Length: 547
Image 1 (tube, rainbow, N blue to C red):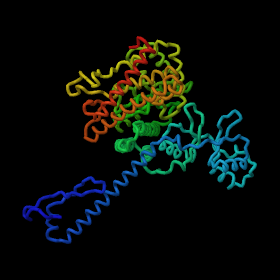
Image 2: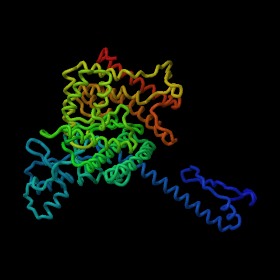
Image 3: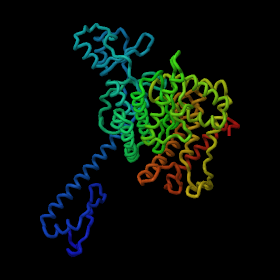
Image 4: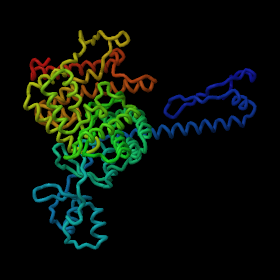
């Protein structure tokens, strides 16, 4: 091993090359003292070789663990759609004996209980039959409404596996009813289908955030989102899986910070909901994101509305400061719950929205664009739904507003292309020739917003809005797939570019020079720009004069 070393008096530090099982080289630093001992005492070499062998085993074990972790991350980010079973639905007056036979025949572990009108009232699981029938020696003729559990805990059909696991843990249940976009239950999912990797991935991180005792602890947990995103990207996860995970972390941090603020400030004087807007509202957060949030509250009649407003403004300030600590930069436009403009009663929100629609000035359009993606994160979600209903109704009374709103999707111009090449110009010298990927994606995002508003679609994620448009035959399935492909590609390179900057110790950015992309990626980038141009053409056709 040490042949060819310099004479003992000339010894210096050396690096020992170790070939790992994966073929990658790693290096073990050997000091001059180690080399002297090796030359004087042959037995020392044997010990060193054992250490090297041990290091190789540890490296192999580590690589195996990484593979398992990546596999589990991919599993946890799969949608639950394929894991649900057709729901067994029974009438309210069914006896437990009848139900037991039906569940056995269907090999079901749960059944939903419906009223005569078809409304789902509760659920009976095999655990309920053991705990409430057998252990209490109830008669088999007992009606199931006497032993069912209510209410039914639900989850959206497009939710991911880790979200289902978290929902089960949060409510202490083993079954979830899976509902479609219209709120109809389409299947039931059993915990047994979800327990393959219960200890890995974002579920652990979200649990830690939910148990954090201080804002500092919330911030420390949020810092782990970046390596988790890196693992997902390295595992070839879809961009939506990565942005969904990053948004889930921000949601969990927001929810925990709201509760910590309430613990300090006392119970809220009125019902409220903390809403996310912008990319968080769309569940499309990247590694470079700022805050866009607000509060809707409903003052109790007879109470002092000013006192309620002051309380929620303090609460908003606590949460926004905690999010800043956790790495979510304050919004440059101050679209935050700490700003009275974005912390208002439900009636004030409605009035403010109506003013946006009437004015339709550039600033109002910009604010509205961020606001339209709002989604309940913590508190009374019904307040957000009430505001959503008002938002959907208002443009019907002022159709000219949609034409003004359409202009936002036409402001981005895909780079001039000549003979199939991308040409860019302008900008500061250090950024000349770069493309801002966030700006490039905005026509797709705004297209989805515009038509979701026009057709009263409640989804906030861009791809969900696009899918809903296709389901209603407002765009073709081919258009849906082409738009989604362009969105996915732009988001993928945006995330990869941001992550590469972070790993190199630089601040993440949304801008890059297309010349740094490989040939295949440049071709896909041109296809994405062509799709953006097609989207803008449709908007210009449907809203002439908007641009």
